Structure formats: structure tokens, C-alpha cells
Amino acid sequence: QVQLVESGGGLVQAGGSLSLACSASGSISLYVMNWYRQVPGKQRELVASISSTVGSESYSNSVKGRFTISRNNAKHMVYLQMNSLKPEDTAVYYCHARHMVVGTNYYWGQGTQVTVSS
Image 1 (cartoon, rainbow, N blue to C red):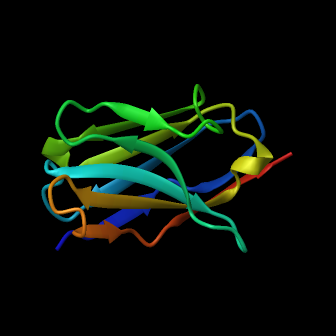
Image 2: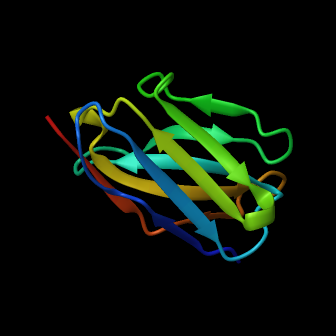
């Protein structure tokens, strides 16, 4: 069982930056770590992902070049640096962990609100 707690959300003006953090209760070294976001009435969207071993990253087209995902396995932490924020980035952001082998073994955080004003 891994518990995930997000932090760092808030209100920012368009063009600004925010840094989200996800703290895990245990080791995440065997987990692919993801950031999702969701706005009311829409499906949850995968924003960024980082692999468990070599740390390769992938991003949705909507955030590529603006967001950076990183991880520190020793500290059980995952981060999402968000730059050049746009009003359409407004959403609840969720941290997600999926076991690299047992794909059905996954966990969600409770989410953190990010609001970008125009």
C-alpha cells in the first residue's frame, strides 16, 4: 500500500509558474509515476509520466515544453514543474503510481487544485 499526498497547488496568473510535489508513504522505485488532471465534467487526463528505472519522461501535447516531471526515489517524491501556465491548465492535479510489473497495483493521491487566472 502506497499513500500519495500532493502539495503545491494554488492560484497563479497566466504566464506564471507553480511547482507541485507528491509525497509517497513508501518506496516508489518500482512504480511508474504520473500526474493527471481533471476539470469538472471532463475525463481525467494524463499530463506527464516518468518511468521507474531510467526515468524517461513523456508528456501530453498540451503541456509539452512547459511542464517537467521529475522524481527522487530516495526521498519518495515526485514533482511537476509547471511554467508558462495558461487558464486552460486550471484543474485538480492528481499524483498516480502504477507498479511497473503488476499494472493492476496502482494508487491515487487526493488531488491539489491549480487555478490559472487570465
